[in-house]
Length: 121
Image 1 (tube, rainbow, N blue to C red):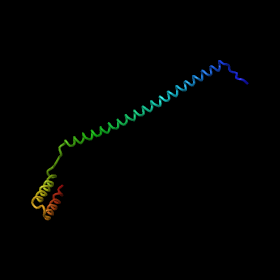
Image 2: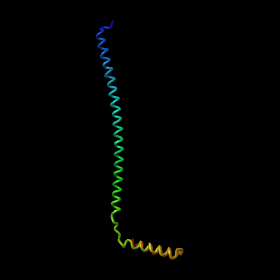
Image 3: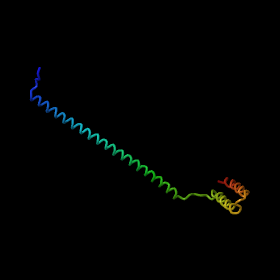
Image 4: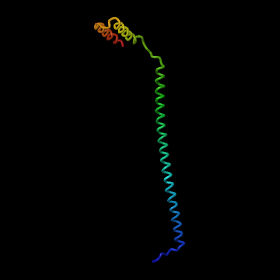
């Protein structure tokens, strides 16, 4: 049994094979280009996400600083009743440290007066 195909049929089949090989090569090239493009898009998205996270962090720092500045700018409500024991303690400590710095009894008096005054707070 011999080959029943003629030269024109073989030539047509060879031309179709060349065309199929060319399409295969074109498809492989397009696939490689698509993979490269996808990789670049993912890298770009990752960079944008990192920048977004950093910007959110900086915004949060700015908000916290603004709130802290606003709170520090407000006057602090202070009542003399709250300050009186502390003022007394300060002056007593100063008085005892100037007049009798080495006496243990003066320190004991300071401690007992301090305990009394601290009950006010």
